[in-house]
Length: 361
Ligand code: TXA
Ligand code: MG
Image (cartoon, rainbow, N blue to C red; front, side, top):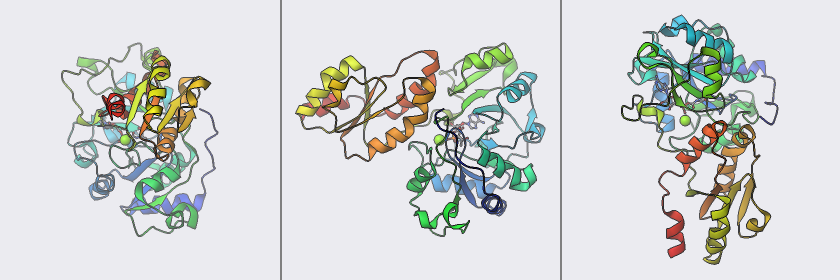
């Protein structure tokens, strides 16, 4: 976590955003993980607008964001003691708890499942919005504010880029006027997201039979969770995938992405260069000799939190360089790097064999 999350929330903008949500509109807002595309979780028509705006399949449930101190019993029918401990230890923060769904949650939010994901984010602008919306008693359903399958946004500009908004259309810059060109009425400004990758998701909804299950690794590690509840969350049972949405197709830029170890890069990069392939490099320890063969490059910090902070902006920026390939130096593989490696594995999805095929032509 590198940069202080910018900004104190502007009360007038927060009030305007809360009013848009209360009227069933969409507001993008910063969180400490990534920017979210929010709607009133109790308004199925508003939630449907999220799916339309993202182009997201309807079987992918969305997370409900709540204010600090929110009444979990309003959103869920059963909160195991261990789940309460996790909420107490990590909220506000980058942890999503999957719990048994209360009838107050419409089908549209949970994609018809009997569970719901709940999270209290720590970004001050998100907290201000959640406290203003319905007097702090509401829930804001919000996936990441990107088109389905794209890289999640970690700045307000990324959100505007995703939804084709001009800065002058943007409520964040013009005092909260709605943008007519998009279902997305307003983007709240909040600097660069400090964590940079999506929240850790732990399924606490079937504790008695399955124990805690880590559905998505993130900044909060399985070990940190175990330290609080005395149970290490298991990896999801691949044989019986439960939430269709937990394995999103990919978090990918338009340019193909491949990974290679520093040693493999030393071999491959000059060959690609010789073939005239423009390569954008992302690494954490790139040897200087290699970068001569790169068309563009971004060096990320060599610790997992610093790397995660810069990763999505690096993927987006390298996607804009006119390169034929984004090559990522394989990061370390330790437990602390699980979240980063999970997201990278998804962004290379579909690019298998790309290096060999570029070298053939
Ligand atoms: O950090 C985050 O979690 C961000 C910020 C905006 O809070 N949100 C986010 O939302 O990443 P989204 O929709 O991009 O990813 C949510 C993930 C999806 O993979 C979805 O399938 C899973 O959470 N999910 C939501 N509700 C679930 C449920 N009831 N059971 C299992 N998985 C669920
Ligand atoms: Mg997402």
